[in-house]
Length: 207
Image (cartoon, rainbow, N blue to C red; front, side, top):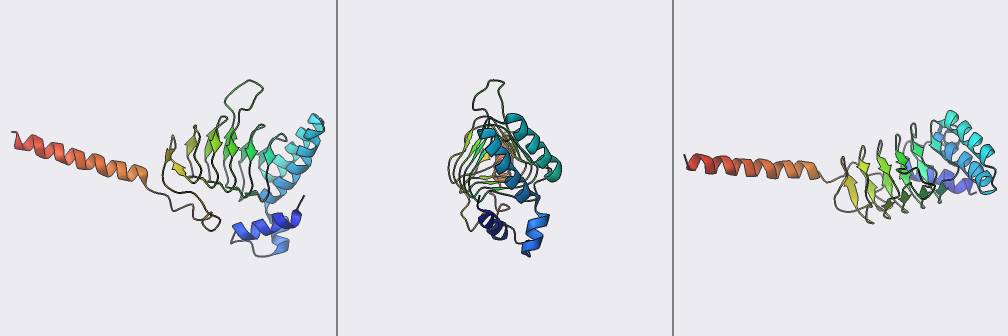
């Protein structure tokens, strides 16, 4: 458990972090990850009830619900975090950035892999919902409020309900630039208005 690395990650990914004491006491995403590591250790030892009980304590303390069966890589950071729910068979890679209200949920009652796999370097925007045993590619960005039901290739931005693909992913330098998302829907609407204008013109010419 690299506590120093976790603290450095907070400073690297949150410009609001001003000092060590503030980070240690005022970052529920950090507390949730630390408590999850302890719960996950119990889970791997087969101590399922104590693991679940510890995860419930973490949920009450932080507002973040992480099942003790979840596998999490290094430098995972949950910013703000309230309302985050991460299901049992989720796998999260290194350097993943996640915001409040994210749900990584399952879509099956069978005891199998049923939650998302998040590739290293991915960014998941606030309120995004990812369902099923889908794969989110490395350095991909999930726009805020999106609903993702299918695999997302590496270095891709997706957004909308259901999510649609845009261009480009997130580099280490651009993880926080999650507002810079191509306006796919806006472009589609412009094309539709252009086609409507053309149809109106054609109809008027044939009067």
